Structure formats: structure tokens, C-alpha cells
Image (cartoon, rainbow, N blue to C red; front, top):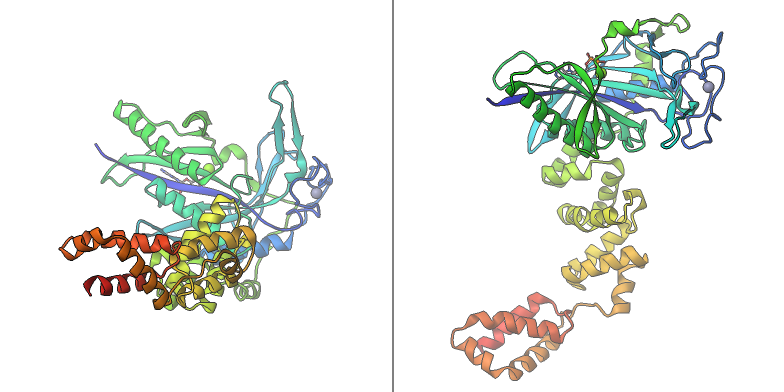
Length: 476
Ligand code: ADP
Ligand code: MG
Ligand code: ZN
């Protein structure tokens, strides 16, 4: 029997507001424990929450960017549960009337484009952070994160493979970053994901029982955790068992998921509208004002890169994966208007260096101007493409201009036909045996001559000129 997996993701994104969602405390990361707190976010009796307008602005931005319908009126609700990182005993979230619904984004995996529905987006507050001491039976709590604004983005069960789930997550993160409302850092927890997955026999229409995977803190883990869980569920069914609806914890070190608890139902939380907060009313004017400030989004930018620069879809996808990378490309392509050449250098040499040095494009050691200078030097024949790679690495490590490096290291390409002819003559005189072999029909030795000439010129001769002159003289 073959199976098909069904995947739906719940994503929590921390919003980059300066202050918390219901009080004026700072959201800054890394402050000493419990210094960014006040009676409101500590849940003292009698305090009243006041909604941060920026949180609504940012959520509307994301809702518009993901094609959602924005509710004229939405409500905050209390989600009741006990946990030591939740001082009020409830989390303020949205339940029955979320701010946005019925959206979608597009993803592309191996050239196949799919539409992934977004069920809803709602606003809520984050909980505090529990820290467990490894060698003492003690845990402490830091409430700095309590009340930091989150949006939860719930997808439809529209994904079928772990790769699609990964692509969807990357797409959401790219959009959040383009909008500059979330830093998207999965390792640091500002972009978190719970993955719901079930399997069913291929060709059937009803959904199987799902499990929910928690504790996934990298893109690689999402795909690995889902692949493992799909295999596990298939094995359960093959053995004649039934998948149990439950929450499971992904253990990246062991590469397995383990049962954490039975799945809670919504009614377990005793949701009810928060009486301390008024219904949130959003008029058309507010939405339109925000719509007018939206940047060009990843999909639109990618389409434009294909259309205007004639780039392959793959290149356009890589270059528009972040706004800063796209800007880098455009700055360089403006100075050196051969887009595919620029793209090749960015996707090859530049991204390799950034990856090796663990830097972002904003921290690139080679500016678009420097890269354009280098490309012009290749174009005008001053250096060969091969030497340019060396020069590129030098620009990156020294910060010097390509021309300076070429001059200092004597890397200028020899294109002067007279100079090359001299070298060729010498090489041919020094290797009479090979010359007669060539003239006797063993044309394979041609490569040997090229090698000798390049060696004699320290690799600096223009290969095209060398080829032409060699051919001429060997025939003559
Ligand atoms: P909660 O997990 O909080 O109860 P929901 O009921 O809204 O929330 O569902 C959460 C996620 O589970 C959604 O992303 C949805 O697409 C996904 N989902 C629902 N049913 C299935 C299923 N049978 N298989 C896989 N995913 C599912
Ligand atoms: Mg869930
Ligand atoms: Zn506070």
C-alpha cells in the first residue's frame, strides 16, 4: 500500500514592535531576567491591558501580503491553562473572531507551483520563559517575554510532502522579512512552527488521524521531523494499529519524535471573550493606508526579475529570497547590465563566501560596486574569468579595489599578440618532438602546448589569443 501525507502548519511569528502587546514594556531581547516587566504583563490583579496599535498595523500588513480577508470587527479571548510561565493563568489570544481569514500563498517545489491556503491569522501574547537547571531540581522563570506580541498563522492542510512544508515556511518567513515585521530567526525562537501531519492510503479522500509535532527549531528539523513522523504513522497502520491523536516532541539529537501528551481540545481551554478588551474595529481607511505602504513582495519581485532581466526562474527565486539580496543584485546589474553574469557571480562566488564566513548579504565584504568593477575588467579582457575568481577572493579578504589587487599582484592578462607569439615560438622550438607529432596528425598534443604557454606566462595569457596563435603557427 502506498500512502499520502497531509500536512498543516501553525506558525508563530514574534512581531518587531518596540513595546509589548498590552503594556509599554520593552520587547528587547537579552535584558537581565525580569527587568522588562510591569504589573500588566506580570498579571497582577486589577490591571487593565491596552492594545498596542503597532501590533494591529503589523498584523494587517501580513494579512494583506497573504491575501487574507480582514475582519471589520475581531475580538480577543482568554485561553485558560496553568503553566508557571503564564502568570495570569490565561493567555490573551483571538479565538472565534480572528483578525484575518481565508488567505493563501504560493510555493514552488521542483518546478511545481502549489497554492497553500491560510485558514486564519490572529494576534496573541507570548508567555514567559522557563529555565531548567540541568543538575539541580530547580527551575526559574524570566517574564521579559511575557506579553511580547505574536501572530499565529494557521495553514490549511494543503501540503503533501516535507519539502512542501519547508518551502511554505521559507515563503512565510521571506514575506515577514520583506514586510520588516519579524526577524524570522527560527533558532532564537522568533519564528516557531508546530507541524500537524496525518497519512492516508493514496487515492482516498478522507483525512487520517493527525499528530502534532512541537519543538522544531530549524528548517532542517521541520523536514526531518515530518519525514520521520510520516514513516512512523505508516508503520503503525501497516502493523494493523491506529494512529493516536496526540502531541509529540521532536528530538533532533536522536532523530525521533516521542509522545508528549494527548491532544487537548479547544473546549479544554474554556475560551471566552476577554471582558477587559473592547472589540477591535478596523475601518477600510486603516486597511487602505497600510496597503499603500506594502513593499514589492517576493512573488512579484521574482516575476519581475524573470521578465525584466531575463533570468531563469531558479536564479530569480534565489535572488529574491531576501529583499537585501535582491537589492544587491539590482544595484550591481545597473552598473554592469548583463544580468545573468551578475546572477552567476552572486549565486556562485558571493553566496559561497557569505556562507563560509556566516555573514548576511548586508555584511557582504564585496559591495555591488566592487563586483561590477570586477565584471567590467573581465569584460574588457584585462583579466580572465579564472583570475577574476582569485581577485574576487582578494577583494573579499582585503577590501581593496579589484584594479589595485591586479596591479599589486601582476595579474593583468596578457592579450598582446606580439608578446604571446614570442612565447609560443619559444615553446615550439623547445619541443620539436611534440611539434612533429602534432603535424603528423596527433592533434591531442595541442593541449600540451596550451599548458606550456600558460605556464610560461604564469597563467596570465588570454587563453583565446593563445589558442589562435598556436593554431596558426602549428599549421604554418
Ligand atoms: P489546534 O491544533 O490548535 O487544535 P486546528 O484544529 O486549527 O488547531 O488545526 C491545526 C492545524 O492542523 C492546521 O494547520 C490544519 O491545517 C492541520 N490539520 C487539521 N487536520 C489535519 C489532518 N487530518 N492532517 C494533517 N493536518 C491537519
Ligand atoms: Mg495546534
Ligand atoms: Zn509590562
